[in-house]
Amino acid sequence: MRFAVLQFGGSNCDNDAQHVIEDVCGVDCDLVWYKEGFSRSYDAIVIPGGFSYGDYLRAGAIATRTPVMQDVRQHAAAGGLVLGICNGAQIGAESRMVPGVFTTNEYPKFICEWAHLVVENDTSPFTSQYRKGEVIRIPIAHKEGRYVAEAGVAEQLLDEGRVAFRFCDASGVCTPESNPNGSALNITGVLSEDQNVLLMMPHPERASEAVLGSDDGKKLFDSMIKYCERRE
Amino acid sequence: MTINVQITISLKEGMLDPEARAIQHALANLGYATETLATARVFQVGLDTDSAEEAERMATEMCDRLLANPVIHSYEIEVI
Image 1 (cartoon, one colour):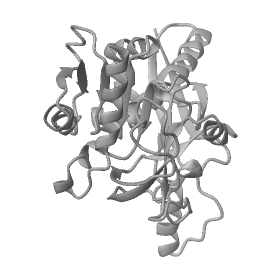
Image 2 (tube, rainbow over the protein chains, first blue to last red):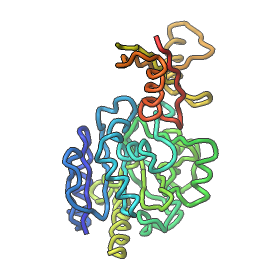
Image 3 (spheres, rainbow over the protein chains, first blue to last red):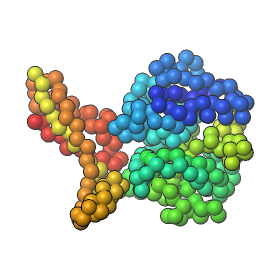
Image 4 (cartoon, rainbow over the protein chains, first blue to last red):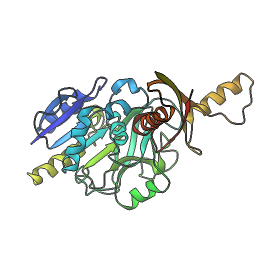
């Protein structure tokens, strides 16, 4: 089993993601520079956080149009796992890997803080090690993280089990006050139709070791690993 | 020959415009009460063609493929 973390100019959570996958979870993980592309197949591709292309035009818009993203879409179409975190989620949404877009926060400032998330789906390749309704603590760090979708789409995604995580309060209730960026229905983790792509604004790689204040994010990587083991 | 087009990208009607709201607050601090305020982004593009029709077609394609995100944006193209 081998994971890849895709690096663009301006990615800055690439090493953190690799560290968690390799050193914490024990799975081989290559850093892949976008210009070099993929020289082999991978079980999972992680698009990490950062500020690819300085967020010019729209966060993720320029990285989406690089040739390597065609390979990422092909990998996803063939059933491979794709995890987009923060800027990676913006890139994935711009690539139409899930419906909707992550755009400027309701209050347009950069938010860097811990967030409570409620797990809405515990059967996907990314969330099987959680249980539905579980409240986890994972930090967010973004200015363009407000999830917006066309009318009725957010409700439909929730109905179809394609919402992985929603912002909530410490007891697991989704309220306007516990929605730090104004996302539709507090949604901050969206799955593709086949559930092999997850785009999320919170940073699980920053919460995968207790020494960092929470290891709630580790189960996400453990879920991916379990899924890939079964697929092998 | 170059044909210049002006492309204006706006948020669709009803979309929250957080930057506009912040600007309205700042204008209020300066003593200007504003009923409405919207932001938009303008691109001025010179295109290598001598056909206005072709220029408009190319600009439309650019909007659909990169400059606008159809989930939140609408756009206007003006051949100058």
